[in-house]
Length: 519
Image (cartoon, rainbow, N blue to C red; front, side, top):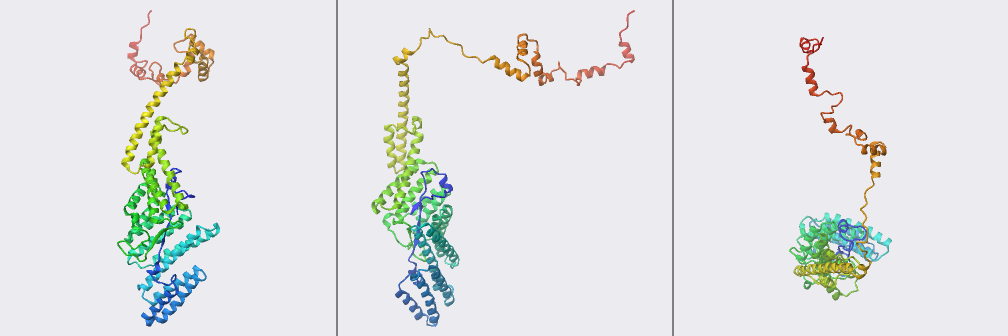
């Protein structure tokens, strides 16, 4: 199953247009792990009995302890196969793990393989609950998801108890737990928690040096970056995905047997609710999510190329697998909506100069070129088509301007307009309206706190300074600084100099300077 988070919108989804959504690829890890670990739970009774008989023959001194271990193990098989009680089955299996720890050495294969078997059993039971969650009622779904959470937490605890060496084996188990745990958070409609688990799965796979499904883990991590709004990082991960993605002729179901390091268990990745091959689904999802990342970077012409490639890959996959799958229909709807958005954005800023409203149709010449946008899969072709589209839009804009000018000229020169037009000689031209003086006087009277009549009288017989304006100029800074109007209470420097130079009264100098009275 693959779809976009619907209820809780992630930050990256909120940054994208409404019609553009990344597609989450819901893949699960499946494994026939008993062939690589211990045949103690899911195998037939004959193989189960032969295993313990062989153990007693090879270890005759430990035969009584091995037979006791077989009894506890048989209890676990009974709880699972006959009573379908997974909780008691897991309890008995964990007792078997502890018994192997005491019977054999802690680093013996019997103990480490039992730990790996118990961890993979937890993942299988949790995955079965996810399968049930897709096809049950709401109440049963909540109970299944609650139990699923407990199993995943228990798997994380067991994974930390695995031997540290070899580190590549432990890293692979971490990747498997992170991958299936991400699907749980996605079902819980918590996209950011699912994104964190997907990023952790990619880091663990890279540490494990095991890469048959590296393209799948890179794709899931790229979707996680898209959900977080980190479009540049998503583009880098998708480019890595295209680099390591196998060709369609390589086949499916290698169960994780290829890579630089042989894995502790062979595994495969399948879609949770669909029968589409995982490599084909990864190809379609990588093309589509690359288009979404380019739209997030506002590069719509590049996004259009990836949309066309996703559409072609989706069409080819439907021809092979049929068109009845519900997941494929959802994928196709997402791809078509994204492609239509890219086409609309490419035409938007080019046709803007034509001033076409949303209800009008494009010119036939532009529409013919626009249809070719849905078939371009190479950058060179897209660049050439955009150049032709710009030239055609420019030509249509010039034609539209000429058409508008011609229509305006014909409208001015039409006979009806000439007959209805009045003669200019017989029309009296009125002077343009002037502002009312009364309104200006009223505002001035309110400003100066006087009457309109006083203002009119002052303006008709203007004195050097009209009395009505004396109040307005009384506190003028220029008047205060003028030497002709000194500030009251302050003596100027000339006055102080003249007073200091005049002698005091009664002195001989003052008497000599005093004028003599005439007889």
